[in-house]
Length: 231
Length: 231
Image (tube, rainbow over all chains, first blue to last red):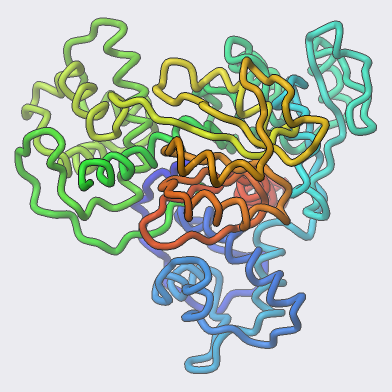
């Protein structure tokens, strides 16, 4: 994902109680928090009491100054020269990121990609529950995938109005991507993870992320080309 | 993907011949270029002669000032008040990003995810050629996937030394991720797209991107939690 630039200025840092984070945190900072959390969860499992911004930075390839700046948006967790309390910072990030909550997810498009997403091992224990799957292909509808019966996409709108969900993962053919996203958003879904190559549009207030491997590859070929030219 | 912060200062902007881009372009800028290119390619296909930074910004959700700043790293493409030449800017971005080159790609791990990646429709016509696939599962090795015979991963190192490739896409189970990446890097692969949940390590000089849907979901639940709290 490309982090869109934020031109917002950081708010004045200060100690804040959990869950009352300020409004204007740059998206690029939010996008780094899951990385911080993942590392902290590992340190927590290893019973590490404290960690320095230097060590966090080393592990994540970010400067210690950036770490301190990022975390200062959410209050002061560290003590000068003593590092961060691993347990406290992990707990705070869980709360900030909503990882102490369970989230209902639907997957639309149960082809190869949709199946791969539905069985992605990394979801385990992260609070994301795939509650329903949808497809339009008669050969797929009513079959069982990972213990869930695939429903026809025509039922999506009615299902969502009856049983609201939090997140929609879209893995349909590109030509159906925008329609699918529109259905999700109109039925009240506030977060969309788009796996199609199409750059779909959503109204303000809906979170949208694109996972398009071509864009990742293209950002690497820039560097590859320089390597080739140097040889 | 999370764009790691860059603290480098922009170089002095100026007109530069193609392919002699300066060294110190922030990664966050490089990561936006494929988005610019995709939009420009569409405008090119529509025979649009010029486009303003305002219009580019509108389409991409980036400020016009940011667009002008990003593109200024690569020379001056626009004329004040006249906009950018679509054809010239698209051509330049193709060259900068290495999209005028064909890139050899291997996919390692031909489970659900690997198959989905191999058949991703967005690769078509983008210059990425999947030249080989590897797996360790005897039920998968020697079978045909999208016209390619899957080879045993034990052959990977020898194959790469005989037939060098540019990019390795890794979709193996997490416990084999680091070993697979090490094999690729030691055999001279300079770019890795990691689909496993493990945050693998590579030596300096190797490009690495992670595609982990959990991190995308977690960056959205931060916002979802605020929406829920507001209700």
